[in-house]
Length: 171
Image (cartoon, rainbow, N blue to C red; front, side, top):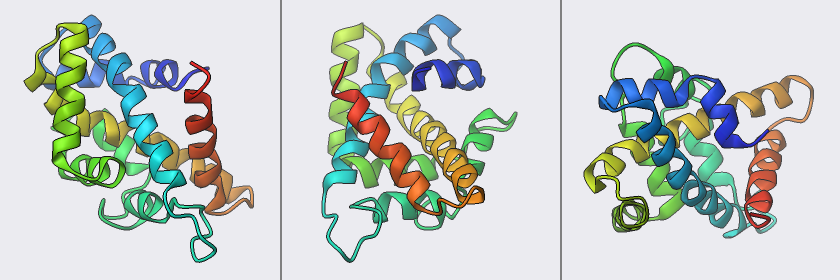
């Protein structure tokens, strides 16, 4: 099952639609269009650096954002925050976007390009990006935590990101 399908089935698209006051089809279209950019950004983050000082192969900063760094160590709680009934605290999502894209300009550019391709409102896409980033990283953190409980440790998150990044190239 693809990451997009997993997020759809977990209720992420429905939650985003509700939070942004849009219909689910618009949320599904936007999610499908933004997700490749987020995953590609994660792939670039996973291949940047990666020397022997980083046991996660370049994922140190990104994993830190998920597991304990700039995102406040929310881990799998990121997904719970998106799925919850309260407004999503998007600062964690913005921190994640900063880790994977490097600057707000890149995030804005992604929103602009997706708006051009899909015809969706750019400001809507800008509001959706941090929420979607939180959902993706929250899902990955939960998968990493499951891997950790089965003995694969922090490498579980790195393995998942590596699989997603390599799968993107096959599209």
